[in-house]
Amino acid sequence: MIAAREGKDSYLSSFPPFEEGLSGGRRSPLRRLRRQALERFAALGFPTPKDEEWRFTNLAPLTKVAFEPGGPGGRPRLGGREALPDGVLVCGLEEALARHRHLVEPHLARYADYENHAFTALNTAFLCGGAFVYIPAGSVVEEPIYLPYFTDAADRPLVWHRRGLIVAGAGSRARVVESYDGSEGVYFTNAVTEVAVAEGAALDYYRVQQEGKKAFHVATVQVRQDQGSSFTSHAVARGAALARTDLNVVLDAEGCECTLNGLYLAGGGQLVDNHTRIDHARPRCTSHELYKGILGGQARGVFKGKIHVHQGAQKTDAKQTSKTLLLSDDAVIDAQPQLEIYADDVKCTHGASVGQLDEEQLYYLRTRGIGREAARRLLTYAFANDVLGRIRIDPLRAQLEKMLLVKEAP
Image (tube, rainbow, N blue to C red):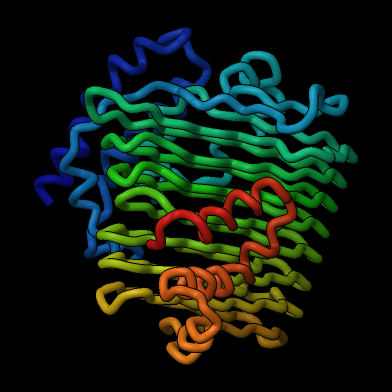
């Protein structure tokens, strides 16, 4: 508790010089929002294992480090094309606020809740830079839009409050890839991405987290869907000493479809924590969720997935599956699939399974001249391929497959 309090105080004391150093200083149009968020962070403090949503994730290694603000960082770019279709915007968040404020303000800080979530409040208080993606109504973006964030080594611990806002207009189609990579130093990425998917739009969202092995990564992705929209998430996490991602989707109108695919890998003493929540707020919506984990060494994994069917959300069809492969006797998984149902005409299922590599399959491969480590890697790849095979960006899928087949196992 003392470390958590001291960690909070270091952020509060670093806010005044941060604010003064901003473009526009105290005259910034975001000043009020930042200050409100800072007050909420001061009141909330960092969560502890006594908080139900954090009882499997001890933040002491994070809160005892006095991180200094690292600045905005990260530059969005379009992969594979020279120009964007007319009206499509991919730019820094500060530029968007200056030139396209009418497109940003209806969505920024409207979905991710900083009133009740400390890390979101902290991110909002230190909001600067980041990325903005706007797809106008009816637009189709054929090439993936890449939002890469890379953290270089520094001579002191730095924190980067990455902020993203993705707005998909009515009837639009796009694919967005958000990636987090970094050096092997000690740093902290505190990321928040807000996503608005308008009526009839279809958005494929890819999130790849490969931070350095001494880094900390805490992220919130908050999605709101409108009538008849489709949102598909592909989340892959391999890096960081401690990685926590909250992915929350609200199906806020009839006929929405949501798919969450996840793959996480950890080894050594890594901790990877995935919390998902799908709110079926309106009738006749569908959601499918599949998360797979591969844990080796003394790694610990957490999966808590909740499907919340609100009162009146009849004809809901929801399915959730969590599967974990343990590659060592010391690896641990805490899996909690959950259903909260307040409607009676629904189809909802959930399940979780944990297992190890099949010795008979290993033996079979070895009798065919395949070494034990290569056989383990092939079986691990086969387990993960159910998720990787759903990735519809060929270069990204090939990169992740190589990671499993070539790099050392978790």
